[in-house]
Amino acid sequence: MFTRTCLLLLALAPFAAAAQADPTGRWKTIDDETGQAKSIVEIRRLDDGSLSGRVVEILQSDRGPNPTCDRCSGANKDKPIQGMTILWGLRPDGENSWSGGTILDPAKGRSYRSKAQLIAPDRLGVSGCVTFICREQVWQRE
Image 1 (tube, one colour):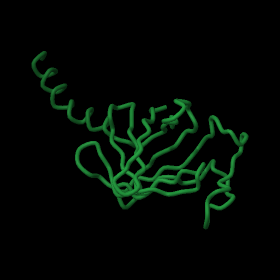
Image 2 (cartoon, one colour):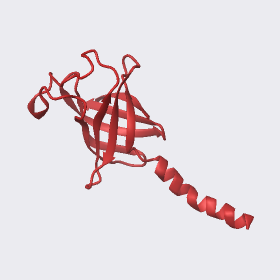
Image 3 (cartoon, rainbow, N blue to C red):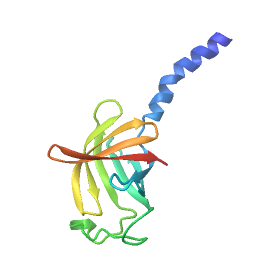
């Protein structure tokens, strides 16, 4: 009986590891310059398999409790940042990494090529890139 239980636990271990390697869920964004938590972004997997993230809560903003994307252009111009999709199009790129997406920085109103890597089950490295220069933030699972 003990041997069967051990074998069952060993057989289920890869599934537990795979579940932890999932980037979907709620993430606290941490500003890479100040170290302050800025918002909660919820990442979900779309029907096409890509990842998308939207701001579900503003934790800290220099522009008040309900900031808008006043520096954005197009459809996001002057829209509330809370509820806004700021990350889209990320696709699997190896184990625990995703690339080929776009991320919007609402504070600057600019979009960047994006990639992400699950550093640990509770830490996600999210990068915005221009040409070959990337800037990474490490988000914490909420």
